[in-house]
Structure formats: structure tokens, C-alpha cells
Amino acid sequence: MENKVTPNGNYKLATRDADKVYTSGITPKINGQLVKTGKLDNQTDLSEYESVTQQAIKNAIQVIDQEISGTEAIDRIIMMTVYVNASVDFESHSKIADFASDYLVDQFGETIIGSRAAVGVSSLPDNAPLEISLIANIK
Image (tube, rainbow, N blue to C red):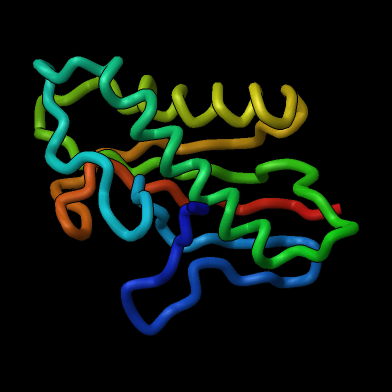
């Protein structure tokens, strides 16, 4: 069964403006259920979050794909913002973002990568461990 990403409120998961697609914050869900919850801290085994981060980036790509036609493709990710549900002392935000960047390079090649930000926040909806937002250029 294909994972279906749907909004939990009155908003769109992605909005297209000419050759750009902007996503909302996308969490690591499969069929509406978070694959992991909770806050990351300096005791967190980051290897547990590679697949979690990959699920969020897969979901973000899926919502972009829903905004483009069959003859179009993602040309590049202009901006990726990774929000990490982090304790005050957490310092590995960029490692979580690396998991997303590495996935993009593996799937699309090195030219896909643009700018990014990795931001620690005190909480995320439904206690999600992370949320990813993308701006993509479409060709």
C-alpha cells in the first residue's frame, strides 16, 4: 500500500508558484502515523534517526510530485529547512539534516542540493522528532 500524505488541517501540503513548489512542514509519517516521536538530546543515538529523517524527506518529495505534471521533474532543491525537536543542550542538528541531504543526493544526484538550515525547536506537532520544509525548482 502506498503511503498517502495528507494535511491535518485547513492548509495545503505544497503550493506551486510558476516553476517553484513550496512545501509545508512535513513530518516522518507513514499512513498518517509518526514513525517515531519525542525530543532529541545529546544522549540520542543519531543512527536511529536516519530512517526517520528519510521518511520525512520522502514524504516531502511525494507532496512536491503531486504538484507537477508527468513531463516535469524536480530540477533542484533551492532550500531545505530541517526543524529538530531538540533539548536545549542538543548540538547535532546538522547531522539530522545530513541524513536528508544524503538521501536527496542518493536519489537525484549531487546537483539537487541547494541551501539548507537546521533549526532546533522546543516542540513540534504531535511530538514529532523533526519536520522538513522544501522549496523546489521544477523543470
